[in-house]
Length: 481
Image 1 (cartoon, rainbow, N blue to C red):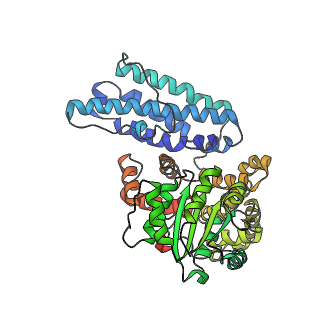
Image 2 (image 1 turned 45 degrees about the horizontal axis):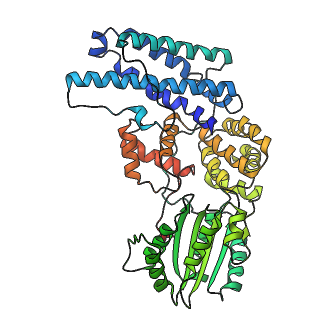
């Protein structure tokens, strides 16, 4: 993931460049004789910005370039902090009650804190900062990077706002759904049946679970959907099941296991219930046994559990019948997904692109998430850009570990690498949230706006772009599945 951190340099440089530019010509900058230093710093940033696209591409395979990008990115935070201090001091004079948010404070998860000696005057600090910046920016000449200002490189631009419902058509997996339904039919005479679906990330385990969940075979069942995540909490799982099954405890928050046991014993008794435990990571046997025991307590009940997990070991430990290993999609299916997501059939140049697209589909290694993300990325691209995706060094780097998991990471890296800098920055900010966290759109956009990443209107568009790229997933309540 270090490569992705390096790719963030362009996004951060733009923010810092805007900060520097906003000070040029200001009354305080002129009075403190900082205007010339600010202009020279702005010019240095613009010069290095022109070669960052080439540097970010090379950083995928070249450690020296990746290290240079990290140094540049770290130094951007130093400049940003200095500007924040300068503006805060200025506001303290002109508006004593005003304070400005620190850019680094909100992105501190990206790099360690960096400080500068307090005894240097602002003018000297600015000069020293500019000299240090020159040392770092001059280093790019050693790499002979190409000015990409007007280069014909792929970009994700002008993407139309998408619907909040992404899954309009599912490619494949009907055969797998039917196999699972048949297996469950043979076993549902037991009090509890647990069938795990396992396989690498991005194959479509959750999609397959949704297909089973929505099958007419379970129309007479009460249904529960629980997102488990990497943080395993049996109390949280129990409360989620109770709140979805109970008419009274819609906001169940029992803190004791015995309270949960008593409530579930009543709710599960004499009932037909389908429970999906999505994204199970817990591999501690005693915890998994405790989970199974919690789901078995209903008398005369018929409980069917579908669990999705990446681990075969977890699948075998929790199952009561044969777990289902989800196989990769065929290359043709991946190509169908790419065509669907890229609006391929509506293109006037589709004949020219078909063979290129099929090669890209093959590189997805049967992973649905990779095909979806790349398909959306390709949607606004010209033929030359499709060729750039096909021939990207990212695929070459990943071929050293030729597995489906490394190929899906390569495809997501590729989608990330051609994001506009503003979108990279907004997505990187989402790293402060844990995996599976339910982010309220309005809250996230408000935070972006507060940090100067976007306006309200642009924030809504950025959300739509990240959803389309499958970097964010639209959350629906259990009743919507």
